[in-house]
Length: 306
Image 1 (cartoon, helix red, strand yellow):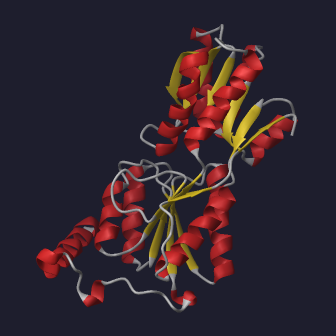
Image 2 (tube, rainbow, N blue to C red):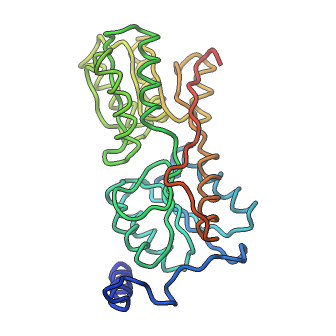
Image 3 (cartoon, helix red, strand yellow):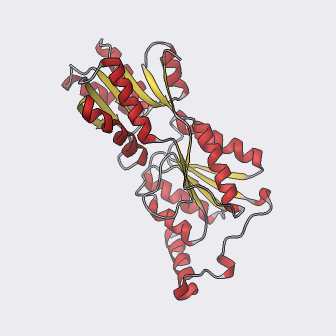
């Protein structure tokens, strides 16, 4: 019913605009003069992951600093739930949407619904495949994948046998980190197995256990995020092997594991900074300012030497 209402509203807008596609005056976005009246909706892919908790904290802290209201919803890694959550945020009258997509394709429909209602959309960490997104605030995931592959080569040499733990299928971060990794690995490493573990620590453990049985000669592991990397470490330790593991994110648990000599390295993002930059971008759009389509947050490779 919610989706039907949004679709009907969007169709009404189109019918009233005529052939020029110029929206009626009441539907045109207005520059926001009074910040305390701005309400931002934030949809997070999952709060069962320290990286996204930090990202949320960055949004909430920056919004408070700017005097903006924020409504936070947790998709729990369920793309259907996320679509319904964003529908709810739209019906609650948010002025802007910050979306960290669970699935870049699945989120496209509600992004387009928001577009029809002239609600600006900013995406965080992952993109949307379709619809008008004012800005994507994210690390350079492709370059991060390359950094991980180059680090593996430095650690175990060219031609080493590597296992890749992939993130959620369909997520742009999964595609981009894998793309960057394979740009280097396909030339100088041998990826003997790869499988999705959905960015989840428990799944990372289970998948790694199975992959170790079938690939006992593996020399290194690259995981698309730290949660899967930490799960892989548990599986490797249980097997009695010693295999370098490189993660991605730089969350607190990963940095602690590196200090303890367990996790080898991580491509560290700055999730709180991503959140802060997203709030600033939303504020600028609502005040009629132009923002860049891609807003980068710096990456750093962290290992036991740092």
